[in-house]
Image 1 (cartoon, rainbow, N blue to C red):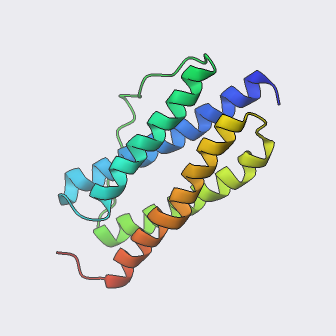
Image 2: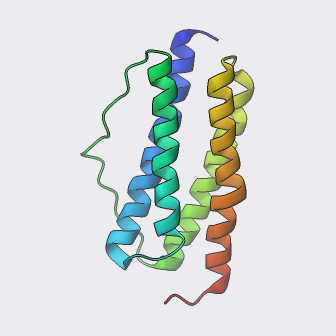
Length: 136
């Protein structure tokens, strides 16, 4: 894997984490501090920071957080959970495709942890919330 390819993988992963954070922030702004969005938005910030740390370690330029990427929240909390479930599934699949290509042990470790968090923590949290149906 070339340095350019590794940088592109990290940029894609960072963009994905930042989009999730922006989406969950839009949901919180529209519907208030509802779970699991208020818990998972913090995790998304940590995920982005972990990727940024790897980029800095490898001396890749870390792009600023895009300010023009305003995200609209779905029309309901149910729709927001369904959208979050789909996004987390896509994130896991994306990491599953990328991780085997990565030779750098540090990057591979970080992206594996992020994939596992999406698969084992975020996805089940959104599924549980959707299954409960009633929102406070």
